[in-house]
Image (cartoon, rainbow, N blue to C red):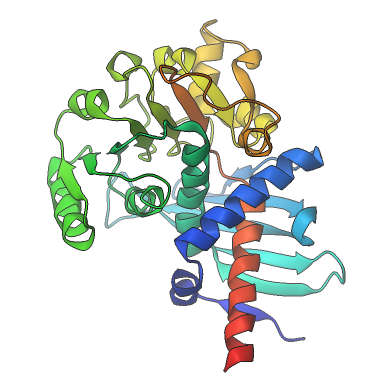
Amino acid sequence: MTIALYDREQVDRLLDYPGCIAAMRDAMRSLSEAGKTQPLRQVIRVSDMATMGLMPGNLPAIGRFGAKLLSIAKDPARPGRSRHVGVVVAFSAETGALECIADADAVTAIRTACATAAATDALARHDARVLAVFGTGLQAETHIRALSHVRDIERVLLWGRSFDTATTLAARLSAEFSVAVEAVADGRRAAEQADIICTVSGSPEPILLGDWVRPGTHVNLVGSSFLGPVEVDSALVAAGRYIADYRPGVLAQAAELAVARDAGIVTDDHVVGEIGEVHTGIIAGRENPGQITIYKSLGHIVQDLAAAAYVHARAISESSAA
């Protein structure tokens, strides 16, 4: 049996942003349309240093099923940070054959940002031009790249817990992009000027407060993917039209929602639906220009399977053309 293997370098080359954004939009639409219960993410504590993550599921629309397997370990070189190592394993639903294995860290970095971009395209105001990013890791970089494909971003405000790190990243991205990327020491200042905000930090405590967010802003909550880290306060959760990537997952594992719910500020009904339902037109996204909209991204295996299938198809196409 021949198994196609795609390492980080190959994923970075083959998983282009426009194609991945389209694939994420289709994947989330298919997830909602299927109405089929998918297993929730499993997180297994292995030791004080390491955790195992398992995300199984299937995407009937493209005839794939599989899982993402991750090792999440503390990174001694970056105190307070973690490193992710793992694979996305995709099988053919038609034959049951193992089709491909792809580097999970590379896939996750791009597909998460592209899913956010697809959601932003559906929820943000069309005239949104200023982007604020809270966080300075890899997801900050990929989100800036991805969102530039769905809105004419004229300015990026970058906040991080380390202003020096934010300054270094802003300088590098400003040199790479035609848009100005500015490091900001004051998170409130960044939020008050933004049309779109992405939190990609995984902070254990709120770094973005509801009082800072202007009417009409779209907010992507991305950095916390399990019960624990809380990137925004309950006031912001309550203030926004709250859209989930996958509703059962968000109800069970979205930390910011859980805190607001436990405080009696919101109920499960605050989650008005899934982004796939917005993509299909089943529910409205933004209802008026002054509304705050929120997209909660936990990440879902259908995104990984769609990304892996896209990478595999491009590789086959390149091979056939050679």
